[in-house]
Image 1 (spheres, helix red, strand yellow):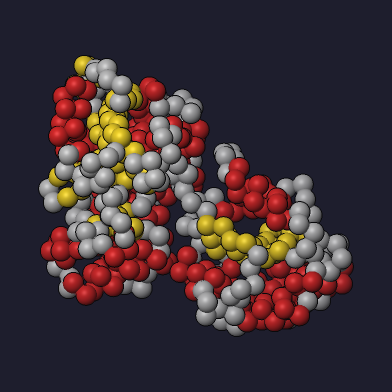
Image 2: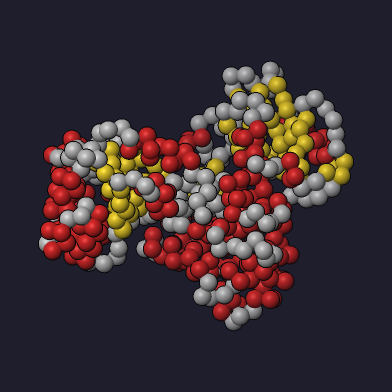
Length: 455
């Protein structure tokens, strides 16, 4: 199953068709679909994907020799495999000197683990030979820290050589829906709130079964991929996972301010700050500020949130209940600790879906869309355009039979607290809900029910 990713494929097509040497760096979290994008891209073209493994340098070189010998129909290489990386890079440079080819090296960080000199070796061959060939070289990796520091970073020998880079992000809600044609729209929201937009996770749910059945079968059994993978990925990336786990758990349950995380974890402020910086670099946590803050990077009002719904779900419902899962108490967990709280949990993901919908709708030309808060007051969504002085205030209610008139009245009161072009701005108001019991008709008010939010 290959869903969407049109922009990524188009970018690769443009690069590979340039007629000159291309050096593309592709990276992103595990299970996000990088390998599938490469395989889809090279299908029907003169191209090959080589996979780096956590094995010896000799074993990787021998396997690459065998695969390239078959790809280039080279009997000599088959009998005389590469003895070092100099031979490997010299070979692909020679083979692509006049006739272009796509050479993709997947999980490149595993090769660096075995030989720290590989970036420097590649730099030498790129500068001397490859940059004048017709190669389309793709380096791909799941270790974001390694790809950023060893390949993209300014201290890397490869810095400045790339002709393009692609960070592969998880899919949005509307693309994720395509994995579940048989789910109701409501269940698609639940599924997205649980799995996020990572294709490797989305493929695990069966849309012929209920949400509770999928959770029970896919998360609440020790041998299951979704039960194990969050811990596996984190242990692959982090040296001291127990402290990171505590911080991620705290953020997942709503402790979003630095002081709250310190109090919840019992860790020192300096340690928490240091570890959160690492989690931000790993693309697991993001720092959020109120949408009207002018200098977001300098604001002291930032909060920390998990970027991915899958980790929010895992740290809310799986991590704290591992012992009960090991004791095979799935029915108790589902009936008492998960499903009674699933609507409250999904309401946060629903806010993100509503923001995504607003970007698609374009009620006006927004510059920024996000949450607004000041002390104890907050508005789920605020969208602004500084040039036209337009501003939208919206509330998201993951409920049925919502009284829109009451919500709009409260929203208008809160909007007066937003100190942004107060004397000369054009205001709009919106409410998102599963359904409305009581509606309101005003020229600057928009109401969106879940059934309206379709592709």
